[in-house]
Length: 161
Ligand code: ADP
Image (cartoon, rainbow, N blue to C red):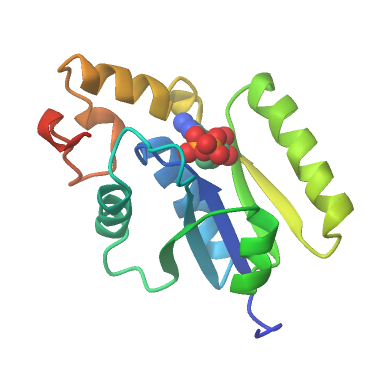
C-alpha cells in the first residue's frame, strides 16, 4: 500500500449509476489521487441490472479518466478499503434520511477502523430526487431515463435481468 497516495473508495450498489453518483465522483476527483468505484454485491441477492453491465456503464462514463478504477466486492466496505489501500470512503448525501443512515454506518466504521475517514459531499439541488430505485422503476415500466444517466450511457429495457 502506498501511503502517499490519497485513495478513496466510493461504494454503492449503483443499480444503475446515475448522474447523481457521477457528479459526486467528478467533484471529488480533485481531492484524491485515485477513486475506486466499488460495486457491492451479495451472491444471494441479484440486482436489477447485471453486475457486468453496471461495471461497463461506469467504465464508459469515466472513459479516459485515469484516476478512476471500477471494481466489484462482497462483504464489508471497510475490508474492501483495507484490501485496496483506501484511507477514505466517499459517500453522497441528498436528504436528512441519507444523513441518518450514513451517520450510523460511518460512525460504526470509525469505531471498527479508526484510520478510515468517511467523506461526504452534498448532492447538487437538482440531483436530490434522483435515485437508482426510481430510475429502475421507470425502466421497468418502459420510460426514458436518459436524462438521469451519465452522458452516453443508454439503458434499454432489454438490458435488465
Ligand atoms: P447504497 O446501496 O450503498 O445506498 P447507492 O448506489 O444507492 O448505494 O448510492 C451510493 C452512494 O451515492 C450513497 O452515498 C448515496 O447516498 C449516494 N447517492 C445516491 N444517489 C445520489 C444522488 N442523486 N446525488 C448524490 N449522491 C447520491
